[in-house]
Length: 419
Image (tube, rainbow, N blue to C red; front, side, top):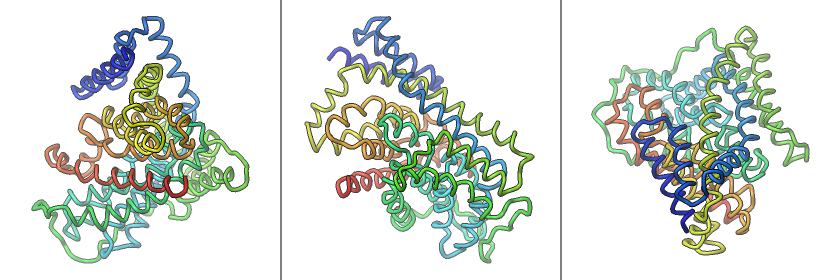
């Protein structure tokens, strides 16, 4: 009991510090130390459990750094922009929200960070908004909703870390949430967006079909999508043919293929540096999340939660998604939330009868419910992409949470049907 209370106090301390704009990395490390000491683990035991937690996620950190090659290449070669232009121009005025959501979903699904995907699509969205007369509020929700849908089926850090902690194939975890992603996209565009109140800050329309002029420097759509397709094929070889290609290999290969098909070899160094910079920030954050996850895992907190939910089916259905949602709320990060939840509760979930693939998938979906809170970078990066004030950005939170909730419910339902 003492260890559980200590872990809770340490986690709450980390949350308070993060909300007060203290470094998330040091907030989580300090929370881990305080949680261990208050939980009666002693100084040596606290440090040992923190190191053990970091050690457990080290393989995933290596894979995440490798994923930076594909992500950096897609952005710096213009492949990501080309994909978003093609989708938006193809769907046009009649399906403007679907176009924005689908473009962001696809970019995130092929390995671009969700906030970077929103920033990439935002310039195209602003042009469309000016011509059609839609508000920044609706425009951003379409992109964020699409990004969340793509994030649960992507080879992004949150999926990699959840799969790694459950020792599940990454491709299988990605496939498990496909139905949830499709349903989430449809609900976002055709139910949640129409329910939003009309706002007075709509941009003035100028008329005409909302096409976006193609930049001659951008590669073609087919050249841009080739690398991500290769990655998906390589990852799919395991469930389809029994040939295991590790993401550590598949993701950089996709980046190299993109460089070849887009003929942007001159940007190889710049692309890799950009991807490494983005992933390094995540890797450092994962070290601290692994540390506090080690404290939580070594405490009696998981046993308390199981006792609270009850054994068997209720534990399967509630613990995985709720742990992802709670931890993502604590850190305002899908990646950190999925890391702490999967590292802390994977053994308990597996012991209760949940398969590795579905445990990872449900935690991954749950981590999208509250990952957009104001103490995280996603909130500010996406609001800034469309020049939205903090007050305006706050109004979007309930609708974003609704998208994440839909994804989570669909993931749980999918587990009940096929898990």
